[in-house]
Structures are given as structure tokens and as C-alpha cells.
Length: 141
View 1 (spheres, rainbow, N blue to C red):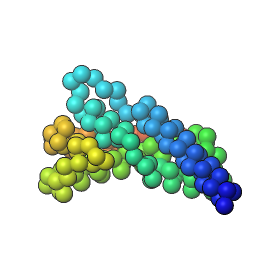
View 2 (view 1 turned 120 degrees about the vertical axis):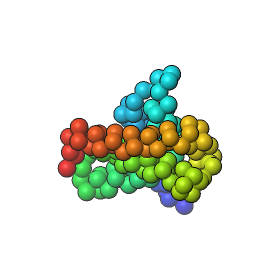
View 3 (view 1 turned 45 degrees about the vertical axis):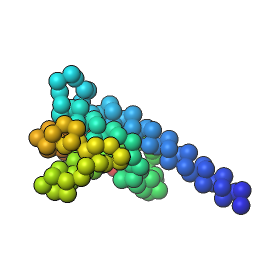
View 4 (view 1 turned 60 degrees about the vertical axis):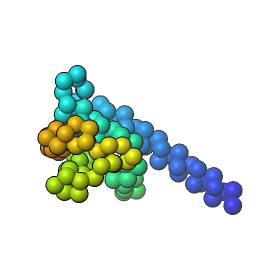
């Protein structure tokens, strides 16, 4: 029993380490927040709020299982681009003309914090940034 608990703890620690690396890199890839730049603030708020990061984790873990080293250039950025696209889809899904969600991950949704217009612009900017990250980086494959 202890061996399986130790194995689980080891896997959890590795997943958390990957989440931490993803969080740092996401912060580096997103535009810096400036006092009057609501779009950048909304992009950061919608993407950097703590979450499970399932999609980028699956990409990283699958790549590793297929023999791609975790420090392969471009792999982390590709995973971050996946998370940006996911964050953009959530922003658009939450706006009132879609499902009108009031909360996301226990916090007010982006459209409630910044307004619908900024939420839509932030989602489009996130999609553009994600595509830019993919095209700027070196392919990990």
C-alpha cells in the first residue's frame, strides 16, 4: 500500500512541477499589464487564474511518452498556446449571448470584470497570440 501512495505522491509532484513551469511561461508569453490596457489585463486574468491545466499537461505528457524530451525547444510554448486557445474559448463561452456565466473558477467572469467588449477583444487577442507563439517558435517535432 505504501508503494502505491508513494508512487501517487511522486506523480502528483511531477504534475505540479509541470503546472508551475506552464504558469511561469504563460506569464512570459502574455502581454504585460499596463494601467490603461484593459485587453492585456483581461488576457492575463483569463489565462493566468489558477486551474488544472489539463490540456497543456496532456500535450506535454503525451510528447514525453512518444520520446520527446520535456526540454525540447518549442514544446512548452506549444503547450502554452493550447492553454491560451482554451482560455479564449472560455471567455467567449461565458459572455451573455452564449451561456452568460457569472463565475469561472470561483471568480467573476472576464465580461463581468472588464465588460463584454473587452472580453471579446481579449479572447480574439489570445487566439492571435497563441497562433503567433506557434509560428514564432521552433517545432518540437
